[in-house]
Image (cartoon, rainbow, N blue to C red; front, side, top):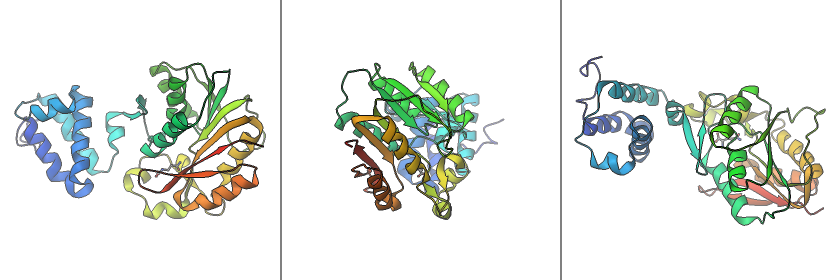
Length: 295
Ligand code: GLN
């Protein structure tokens, strides 16, 4: 393809970045478009932010220019940047993503960091359990922080587990993965004496679809997101029951929640014998609950 068929004025970095802003700022805002550019230059050319800022007059070859062309088209169609480059960062781990797994979110990272920084994990043999693991990001981040822990991660989706296994391997972590449907009644998790049970289960009510962005609706797996309006806390009920059996005394339960259902989720956890504490995310919304198991 000739550059003339592309809309970039030239192969020069300045012209690439300016076309991105021209075509995407109205959709995403200028700050976010600058971050997209940084991520694409890093992924396609291995350039860091400083190199991008100081190389505006440099040109790139035609095949690289084409990649920027297709990425721009994809972004106009709301395709998530993480799918375009194929990965995202989660707590310092490189996590590959695809439409089979939920793209790890910064608020989930906050929950994991909180658990790692604010809860005392001792050094006796113990187990961590990650329920609804998806890409495996939480389990992998925990295993990296505590290599001596035995980490088990569960998901209902075979395709998600395939991705999670790949991610565990590429991050050099050994994790036990189990295919289990938490909503079924006849499963048995081979985990006892857990020090930490953590989960980011599906929690968006079907009726909330209308308010969601196309990049989430069209590209994240519905299975990882949605729950019926008539029983939006079904996963928390299952998680609480598992936690009652598998957490050791003083063990921690941490769950991400729907910001609109914090109170209801607390009531459910209290009924199951927990003393929940709600935490806000960086947007100031109630986003996760912690509870130390003290029966
Ligand atoms: N936080 C996610 C979103 O905004 C939802 C994640 C979930 O359902 N667990 O789309």
